[in-house]
Image (cartoon, rainbow, N blue to C red; front, side):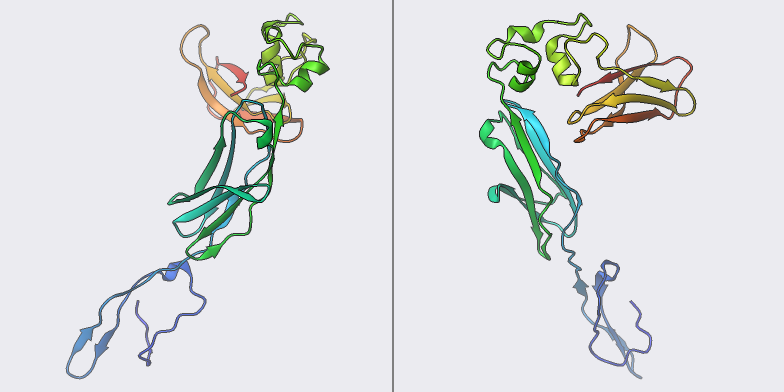
Length: 258
């Protein structure tokens, strides 16, 4: 870095920015000649800042829950995941995203989850609180007891998960996963409206706390389905739109629960 007009033997940088990071040396010149100094390296440390907050979620007893947080700042990062204010795991890594996974979730895992993040420059503000709600599933049929009671199923028998009460070709388990009504043949997982054009728009009604994927293929009965887009789970019912930016004259789409 050239410093025209500098007259001091000391270089002072104020309000240091990341763009000033690098190697520094001074060349001393007199009437006889010039000589360079040894190189000094300036490393600018940036405190962590959260870009993507962990999200609340609802899972079945025996299922899997995963909380993620994404940050920016100087590596390495230390992530302290907490449940109800108590550390449950501490990880130091050279990654800007940390995911905390709970498998075989029990009712005791329910609570408030946060991430405390630090690096050599300091600490980030504590993350937003992600609430884990665990739904009881006494018979382990992968349908919540509350849902079974609401629709008149037996919470002590896993057999009703494989039945199709409304005859819409979706078994009760799939109705639960999709958030549709197991007693209404008109309620099933579907694209409600397809708007042709470039791009094509696929509209559907999304249920709270459900994630969705849209897939396509250009011929029925052959070939694998190709991923087009995904919609993350959100806390409310709403209308969602997924677009196909490169449609062809004949294409088939389907809406699935990942």
